[in-house]
Image (tube, rainbow, N blue to C red; front, side):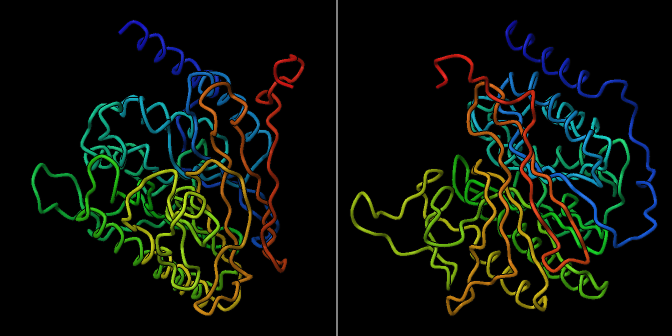
Length: 386
């Protein structure tokens, strides 16, 4: 108990340090832009912090670095903590909201599986996952605004389509308050609650009923967002979720490998080097195929304008083009971006972010610059790091 109290005090101190002379966020929009199509920059990050060092050392440096960049806004793509051996108590959410509110620019957020899906693991406290999601909604999504010292207004999926917490089934349907969208500088941005752990179909307590309702709501939100983007004349769409859904036969980090034409799992293969397994879960449950098919259809229907899909989850920074059409042709105007996140639960060297330069008048619209947060760079002066 004493150790847990000490860790909590360290984390709260880190938040206070990061925030500086922090005052509660106002509802003021960011400063008015004389040219709404002028270039701007945004920040993407997620899967942080995963350790006490990352919280007490890495996060203050990260927040200061992002604030110095004078961003239009940032988006955190989920996973407020490591997936195991870390409680999903109420303090987690208030502490994480304080990180977002320490950012000068508007700070958008979408939940991660470590925040709610995996909270039913005994080593995370054995919570009811849906109860934790409902609580997370109350903390982060009670108003139609981002977090941050200045806040952007967002459109919210208010229709009661998502299963909410109940001790017994069937679940009541509640608004999907975490699903958001907003137009900025000619681009439509959206978030959707798409999760790791097979999108809540595997791990400790799989929940097909919860998945089915939320998945249908996510697909409806995706379709309405692209319709709104077309109507508004958006030059591009950026989708932000948490899970790495897997895209083709090359990536088995979080799901089984996929047939890029059907976006379904490839059949099992024989032999240790060719077996179709993934590092995250051994379940064959697929919580992503219908979602990916909807993403592909929406992308193709957007008339050749850029579509960017941002996620975290597998902690590996990459920008690539993994999406193919049903005939196997690569969809060149679709780009996947994975934010760096944590890949080592000790130290603070993985606490960094991605800067995205957005030029609505350019052909590709987006360009990407991974940032080096000076205070979080590993020290190689010691011989043991060489």
